[in-house]
Length: 254
Image (cartoon, rainbow, N blue to C red):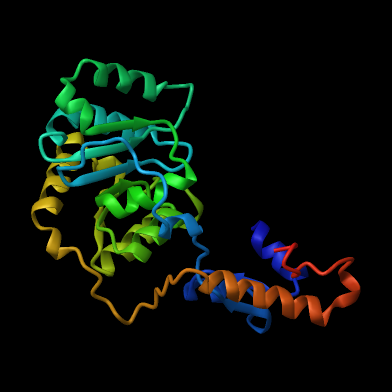
C-alpha cells in the first residue's frame, strides 16, 4: 500500500519484475531487474571449513529463521554425513538459536566440527566465496536470496515464510521451481525428516536442477540493473532540475 501511494507522487517507478508492471501507472513505470550486491560475484574472504564434502549453505536471511534453525538442529548429524555445512543462524534473543546449536557443535568430533561452520551473520566479503562453494542453498524465499540463487544458478530448497504481502515468498519459490533450479516445501509440511529426504535427493540428483525455462528473462549480469537505475535517476534529474538542490547522479552522489 505504501508503494502504491508513493507511486502517485513519484516521477518514475522502477520495478524488478515484469509481473509488477500492472501494479503501477503504466506511463511512468519501467522494469530494471533486481539489484544485486557486487560482493555476490567476488571471491574475497574464505571461510575456515573442510569443504571436501559438497557444501550446503543454510540461511534464514540477515535476521535468521528460528524454524529453519530448529529443523536443522534435529537433522544436523545426518546432514553432516553427506555435506559440509555453512549455517547462518541470525541472533534472535528470543530463541538463542546460535548458542543452542553451538553447544551441539562443541560435542561433535573434531572431524565433524571441521565440516560445520556456524555463524550468526555472514560478512559481505564472505558471501561471494560461500555462494561459489555452495552445491545447494537451503533458505527462506526472500527476493534477494532468490535473485542471487538465480544469478549464480545454484540449486536451492526453500521454506517460504508463511505470512507476507500476497504470499510473495511462496511466489518467489514457485518461480525458482518453474525455472528448474530448485524446489520448496510449505512450512506446515516441512518436517525435519522431509527436509532431510529432500536435501539428500537434491544432492544425488543434482543434474535435475538446472535452469530450463528460457522464456523467463533473468539476466543478472553485474551492473546491468544498477546502471539501468542510474539511467532512470539521471532522466528524472534532467527533466525536473528545479526539484534537485544538487546533482544526485554525480559520481560522488552515486
